[in-house]
Image (tube, rainbow, N blue to C red; front, side):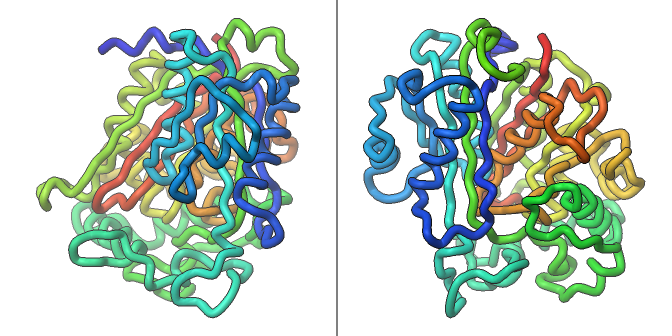
Amino acid sequence: MDRGYLRGKTAIVGIHEHEARFAPTKSINQIKAECIREALDDAGLTKDDVDGLCATSEGSNGIMDLCEYLDLHPSYVDNTQTGGSSFVVYAAHAAAQIASGRASCVVIAYGSMNKSFQRPGTSGFGRVGETYADFPGQFTGDLHGPTIHGSYAQTARRHMEEYGTTSEQLAAIAVSTRKWAAMNPFAVMRDPITIEDVMNSRVVSAPLHLLDCCLITDGGGAYVMVSAERAKDLKKKPVYILGAGEAVSHSEGGKRDITTVAAKWSGQRAFEMAGVDRKDIKLAMVYDSFTITVLVSVEDLGFCKKGEGGPFLSDGKIEPGGSLPLNTDGGGLSSNHPGMRGIFTVLESVRQLRGEREEAQIPNCDLAVAHGTGGTISNRHGTGTLVLSNRL
């Protein structure tokens, strides 16, 4: 099916990120509602304009609970669940609904209290600087029950054996991300780190160290989508969706190469729809649950050849001033990771394309990729990829 008809037909016109990384007095729906309200205000719209809602669900009544909480009666709802990539995947779904005329104003929202909620294996609330490494009881649901970080470590080890990737190259990703976080006042971890700091942090699941692992925080966000035509008359500079792709991958009964992830297919679909080259991308927002997630995603998105991610990402190009700025908000490794982080790749892309990032602003940023990953990359997972631009 030709999905090229979606190119440039819709735009993101309002955004909001919940700035608190620890919000024990809030509810999940309250976080979502606050983000929706602020995102609509950012766009110059109101709740009465909304006729579409996309959000993951908590509880047996799914998205209906959120509709009641917001007193919304949308003509289009979507609670597709592909983990952290869901909020990137929703953009493609919403674009199709808007292009077809089924909806005119769609809000995509996320809220989480992952830090506030008591986690399995702990005796209380989350602590500042906790990462997924602090919860060894987290299982993927795989037949053999590996932990989440153990599964990602498996991919990292295989990549090292196959391509000669080193722990120092993975550490360089964490170091770069922290440099960007230092320019984000809402990032949890802002103090500078070195490759030696990453290497000297405790081993969580070899070869991954503590600082190779994402944070655990509360948080949320929302963004608003309308047609490209309607976007011209609204409050803020539109950010157009040029390309969108989604994909799901799984173990294939043990036959799949675990160093290849679904980004290979979602990225290809998004870039083909957008009709742009990787070399023209000014910003890459790539889901970073672990440093290895970034490395294999960047390879499979086509920014470098398979097996070359280590040297490609460790030569300074993804740092401030580099040729491919990556995760300029500080990412899940240093800014925030409420559990499903895909929405923040979209929010930061929009901020950069609007020119709103002040100290961390990328000069002449006109083309960005937002990429989300959900699930476990060595096993079953889903990805969503967007190519975004501030011009058509």
